[in-house]
Length: 427
Image (cartoon, rainbow, N blue to C red; front, side, top):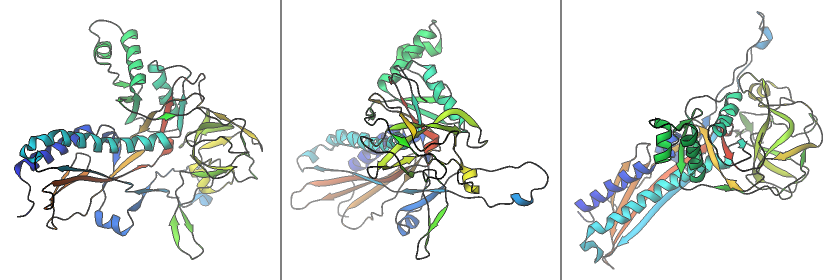
């Protein structure tokens, strides 16, 4: 059989898969949605993931006027990433196939890094729960602030994850080894000897060896119209109907809003709106803390896209009452916007496990078409495909290792970012 795998190739592939599997640290802390390859191809590699229903209750025995339909919201998910690692081994290098060890290790690290980074980006770019700390990372109080915010807004207390940059993580470990110092204390000993934070403030913490940074805000003195007669409040809807009669699902994670200007506004900026308070998503009671928002895109000199949308129930519809996330106690045509990213800083993302979802894909590469093909799957379902082909013109062996996957932040209001050294607390 032409181009069949020899023993060395098979060992190399198994080693790639093992290293790849071991390195998937971040993606092991998100939810996994397995898909059917044929269905995904027929749907253009896009399918819709449902968001949680939010129930309503009423007082009294007579509920005649309260029999109403529920509204199902959904989020589009797709295979947005195909990563490939091609390489060549010459006929001289093939005299010692062990030389491939270094190559396969680098492939394992890079492909795992690609998946991990995609998961982190989904949280860093779309997480809307913003915790700004005045000083550098210090320990429990930093994490407790996140815990309080998530509790107040009704985010499930289980499976909370916090990923810290190395400097922030080590600063927290320093706090633990000092404040709990007593010889024989498991917490302080591990913090001292291994810089281990572990579980703190109801979050399982992890150390990043790379991360993203958020620039300091450049915009200033911006305002937004929060009057009920204006259009800056959002009315969710499950579907929209085109003029042709075709009905499509609607992504309700984002909203286009009109500001006084978008001058110097940047994607990623974090802000609050005056008198716009966050609600508990189930009870609809006010948290007494301002709701935090992110800038996702700049559309024009006055319009931008934000997440989450401002669902204030100012329109008075049933679906607004179900998904209301803010209460605006004082409306105005020029409500002040206050930015939270005052100083350039590392982004420390956090999320509930169900907020971020990884979609492992499958490539339709077939064996017997002139190349040898080998497949394998990691623990989280990510498929790895290795192909090998010998070029008769050069006598070189051509290898490529591919993976297909998607990542979606289903719940920006169940994920967020922690910023240190901002000079002031917020919100």
